[in-house]
Image 1 (cartoon, rainbow, N blue to C red):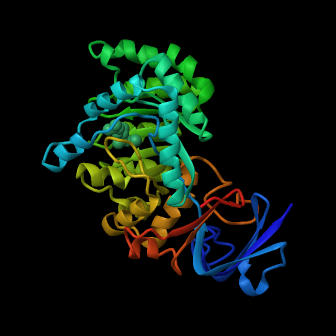
Image 2 (tube, rainbow, N blue to C red):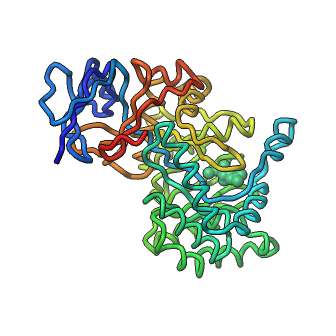
Length: 389
Ligand code: NIG
Ligand code: FE
């Protein structure tokens, strides 16, 4: 195996407290050794071992590639008009999802796949090296299974979200749609997915329906995650903890009991500030969750309706400015936090044995992600030990 040493790193975020300072395991004046696809060594540049190749990071910051644990990339069409109407005062409604369902059903496989590839490329250029993506704009047996097949061409982290909203043709009989989602649709979709998700919200699925859907998915070997407490208070977060879901996503409207439940369980709270930005909703209170001891992840929720951004750096900046996170916390949440939300330990950190997925910033410190908002700081991205950007 070929080894590479990256030297002259001003600040290396390892996310391993044993290797450096604080929860980020920050090492100043650092070096990183890659052995093929994995990290072999991380430490002070002065003690770096020899390697076959030498790369000079030029006094830049290096951090683990971002882990975007929540996106909805299998879609067609565009909702610019809906966004414009919102920015003129209209509220966000889950019903807008129907517009994208119609466009997605009408699109060819090739068109959908090209769309996923385009957005993943866009995310990669902004430092994202691991991404989850979902179905949820098909809502028939064939269209959901197709969405998952296409998603699986691009990532291993694939989520079945047949329970995004009740399909339009079942609008007058939601119970029949839940039977479809937990029956034939689940049978067709389970082989292509790792996760099952449900949008637990007024206008989508209530707590009992969400429990039935996630429980059926678990029985088929899928792991649960949930869109919870996004637009209003509700049962989603506590259901997530009860079912040991990997993540409760959004967490915008939380009672003290919701926060206590998250603090007592293994469920990560994934915050998606792009959605609050694009819907002018109140920000989720990251500070409250962190102070209660909850593990917090930050992701994009990239989708054409509520959050059409693929940029984790943008989400980091929002989280620092408006959600009470420190830059260190936000960077941890966008890397190690995202990995925890996907129950992964091989990504989201740069310690020996981890995957050599990393981002180089044209800045001396990871803090610049929030200090210099909107500036394209990501200058190099490496995946599995190979430079791809
Ligand atoms: O996570 N909340 C549910 N689903 C998406 C929005 C999807 C859409 O509006 O198309 C979300 O925000
Ligand atoms: Fe979402």
